[in-house]
Image (cartoon, rainbow, N blue to C red; front, side, top):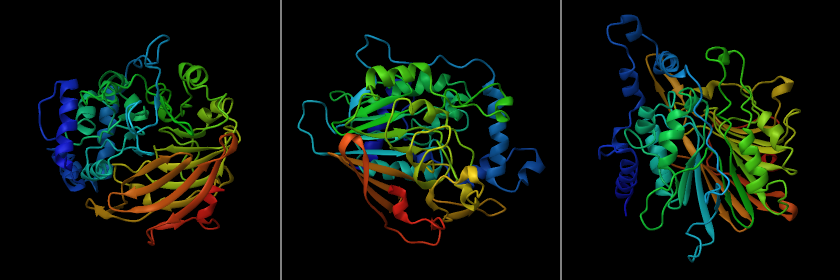
Length: 434
């Protein structure tokens, strides 16, 4: 089956779930120039003269926010006692009982669901790699309404690539700007494990999950549900992003992560544990530190960049983590001009980041960076991670699980050289695994 046939087949699956008209979704992705024209408000000369796409998008975001934000949050979904689905699935490339190859590929990216041509290119590149699992780290723009989920995730304009075994999407702040209703009610039923007979998705039961093998635990967390507070005031008084009690109980009772002394732990979330560029959210790490007694590999999004950190724990978070920001899935990467912060609070072990300029958009010719994703290939006790843009692998690292579930960095290598691929002053690439 070629790529276009795979795209059509995946889209037909989501048609059934959402009763959508059968159209070719991914061909409708918009370039940044087209988005610029689309967002120029008619009849308002001042807005037609707005400097660039990015500033206009802020105005649209405010409109969507005001329109969708008011009201209570949608009830938090959780795995109910006695149900067959408890959110813990085999990290395997085939249905349990079938002969399975040794390697399992998980492709993931964050902040992808933007409906842009760049997101389309990333989605196609992910699909071309034939992953067994695909995971979106969250943020459906602008505020995760049903219309935006259909357009930006389920094929109206761009189609999220489905893994041969399953696909999942984490909750994030943009989904919660629409109070989480469309995310829980319309997106999650279109995801989950893929039925081996029908080929359709069985539904994602909650906003958190675990993929488990003999050597690894890959745990998806919901930092989004508590990323919103009182409308408007939440932009001033930052919510904690704390993990819900039901999720913490699931970690103890179903994943039993506090008792596991054998497996390496890979955490996935939308919000960053720490950052050398922006504020951070270390309340979830503090909660997890009561259950996890060894360093973890932690992938997150939220910041629209690719950035690699060495092992670090904040004073409040306590949990030691090798941080990897892969929030560069689909939005214009306008943060390439950002300079790492120099104050003591933000000295969190930055090693590598991508500040390459891909193109310039808008009347002010704003430079934007490269979009991309990460491929995680699990093979026995070894994990290989490729950090990619839509055309090339930039960086490759290899990990192993040692005794008592401890991670050991085997190697890390930069495969593409370029002025905008920056190793932070005073750091070496190997610091990312120390």
